[in-house]
Image (cartoon, rainbow, N blue to C red; front, side, top):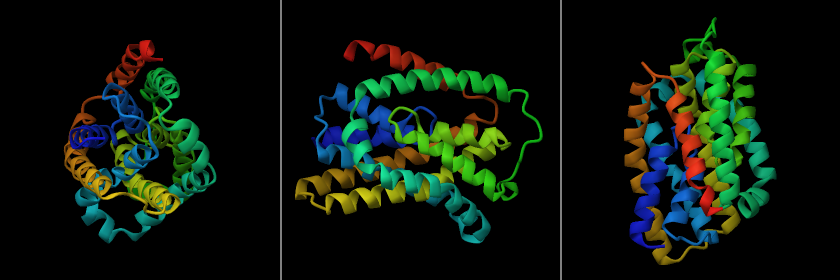
Length: 255
């Protein structure tokens, strides 16, 4: 992997991490277009640079996180299902799912269809929980359980948690914000587990690539988070659903 390729992947990661279109799926598709071999380092790179995107959320929401301990507890409760499944299925996910273009294309397509259906359902949703402090622990745990599905590349962690939040009564903006915050322990754990499993066995040039990826993901994620918060004030996720479907169809010839 070259520095240019690392920069491109970092921008893809930062822009797509918090949008309901699957950052992992986009990294795999981008890697295909850039002819980047799916080596063990590349797979680790795609996991580790997510920390840069997560740091952008910490930067934006630090005042809220600093003063609301109860919110932290709900975030951690929501993280538990993914933490358990991620630990148990780590080898399967990294060996058979990451880098699998076919799974990405199928997941993007089916996820887009499901998003269209859910948007139709949620149009009439009432009795919504407007604020994060009104979210109870059972509902937080259910959102976390739904998030576990996103271990499949192409599903989208963001989409799973946003629609999971809306399914338990969260207002759209609140569901998006909880998705942002739930990414913090989720991505920290994913990166930490990968570093432990790989034994930090990176070469000098690879550390440079990771640094470029981390930095690029941070700044592009800052822009993406602010964009999404503004976008959802007057829009739903139909355009993102259509985008997923079109993208999946466009990559069918590569299968």
